[in-house]
Image 1 (tube, one colour):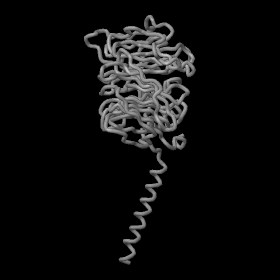
Image 2 (cartoon, one colour):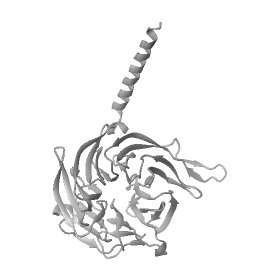
Image 3 (cartoon, one colour):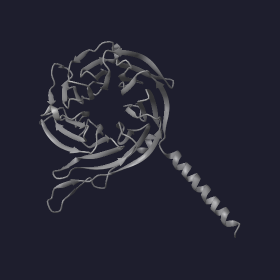
Image 4 (cartoon, helix red, strand yellow):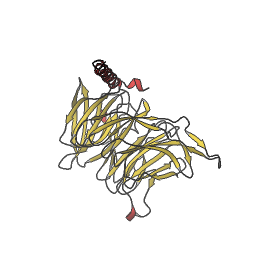
Length: 377
């Protein structure tokens, strides 16, 4: 008997190790496919629509702008174009352009917005919004989805503006601080709720944690709230549908997911919060093929998470009869450390599920592959 007990214990431990190994193998793995080091610091990256290439924008050590075009060829990142521009570039988007048009919009450190034709080499902008803002443009986003091709920008001057890409002379909407001396630095901006030709919502996040939702159709503020920390990134889970969820990335490693379907006049939107990084969460991006899956970039690490809906998304107060939202939960699927410096930019490939390009402040770009993504559907 005394000889049998240790053996049985060893067998059980061995079985548990095998089960744990099977669980690890069944999980989605975040794998580095290829990497490339640059002289420039990259601030934003975007896949070129319907292609195996992407653009990266940033700043060279001499403060010139970096506008680069790369392509994946046989598992390697190949440089197609690497150009220097007079002013450092901070942010970019293809959101306002059709997939066939492949027109890139960039915001720079001098407050200008430029439109570039990727197919023609991006040697010179095809259109420019000169002095769109008084200082650096922190964030930019675009929307099309059957409506007008619009570009939203935000800046350190506290202003948030919306432009029609066909008429660069002046913005169609300009949200200016009432008192410029008290203006907050606006770090990020997004367009969503593009469920028809007329509907569109503007969302902006600020350095003091403020988040503002503005209805462009009615020209009214929908809702304002504060997340208690600087808002580094905002993202609608799907910008081309009725508002559903909003992912807010902030300082101190925190991510909040807001359910935007039910707005209670007293408590606002329901949300769930999770700490996904040991440092700042610079960026979070929902998977285009599954809006409940999102990747967050933090202090040298990538975190893949899933939002799980509650049994009921709203409940009515028995006393007042007013609906109140119910938040779901955030489940961490996997995490991978890819470097020592913050991951400050990323973009999922819109067609190739699980293909991700990232940029970090160590001047390194990485193309990542997340395996077994179909198992999450």
